[in-house]
Amino acid sequence: MTERTEITASRRWVVKVGSALLTDDGRGLDDVVINDLVSQLARLRDQGCEVVLVSSGAVAAGIVRLGMASRPHLLHDLQAAAAVGQSVLVQSYENAFKQHGIISAQVLLGHDDVIARDRYLNARGTLNTLLALGVVPVINENDTVVTDEIRFGDNDTLGALVANLIDADALLLLTDQQGLYEADPRKNPDAALVESADVHAPELDAMAGEGGKLGRGGMVTKLRAARLAARSGTETVIASGREEHVVARVAAGDNIGTWLRTGKLPQNARKQWLASMIKIQGSVELDAGAVRVLRESGRSLLPVGVCSVQGRFARGDMVSCRDVDGREVARGLVNYSADETRRILGLASTEIESILGYAGDEELIHRDNLVLV
Ligand SMILES: Nc1ncnc2c1ncn2[C@@H]1O[C@H](COP(=O)(O)OP(=O)(O)O)[C@@H](O)[C@H]1O
Ligand SMILES: N[C@@H](CCC(=O)OP(=O)(O)O)C(=O)O
Figure 1 (cartoon, helix red, strand yellow):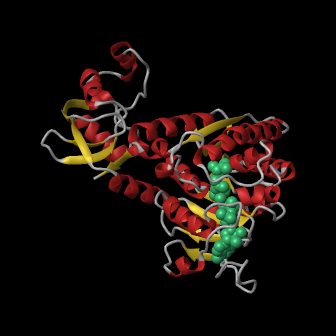
Figure 2: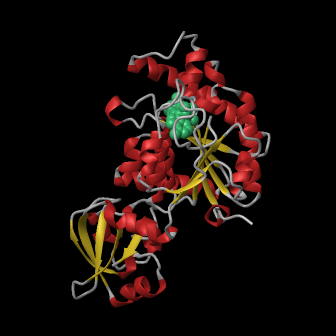
Figure 3: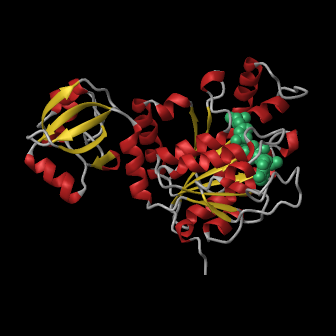
């Protein structure tokens, strides 16, 4: 009997695999590790789960392919290595997934894609569509173009932001250690493994140390990532990618690795996060029917239920939804700008394309992006 019921109930997974594990101790990509990981992910999908893979390894693979003696220090050298290595990386995954009849897709994300509100909605829409098509997105940071000031640098943070983006149930951080130890096991071989802890427990900060020579952030960024993921209710497990059948064992709730518990109901966590995320840019006035469906059935807001628009806002902005007396009913991330909303308000969603000239979302605010007030 497992105590990790939040993990065994998880259906949507983000699995992040770090450089420390993938890159054969600096000798290039380890195809044995990649093939084994991909067959484990294929099995997870066979159990009815959706899988998004966040994979590091581009820089390390590029360094080897370009015959560089060591990791370069100059930004453009690193970016050139990433450009070369990313295609090696994605080719390895494409070949490995093909063996299991699975289509994979390369998705390169930058800071703005997961932070800026309009691009946030685009990235979310594309990833959800890929998952609905049965594709496994293979995500990495868009290292070739990011600058130092805005790069994530480590993929733990990117993994967590992707988990927020797609409302993942679980984030699995696969690395070269069994999990989070009470001290860095490289410096303190007797340190004990933390099997499970509240993700927000302050004592964890003193335990997490920096990364090894291949990885970027060590346990510091993994702990931070787990806390970021927890904002949208995602549970995190840190485990060793070298452990046999690690993905299946974690998914089955085995007591391996470190489980960082959110202690929250996922839906509430996501809505709280959404509500606190951004300031309100404008508002829409709803008719009585729309107020009722939002309140009573938890449905999305369609343009047909909107009577008027106040203020200026862009796609992805947070907008307040008010009843005819001006009382706030809900707030959420809007799919159309204020000008576009003025043109489609009161209309059926089937008319959006002929009015705006393109087929966007049928909802003005999708229920997943809407919080009742
Ligand atoms: N408390 C800790 N428990 C486990 N590992 C730790 C701890 N503190 C620091 N580390 C280091 O973090 C490393 C894993 O992180 P990192 O090198 O960034 O790998 P990855 O590429 O998988 O993200 C381990 O090799 C380990 O030396
Ligand atoms: N985007 C970089 C990954 C950075 C990195 O190594 O991150 P991590 O695996 O979290 O230590 C790459 O593909 O080389």
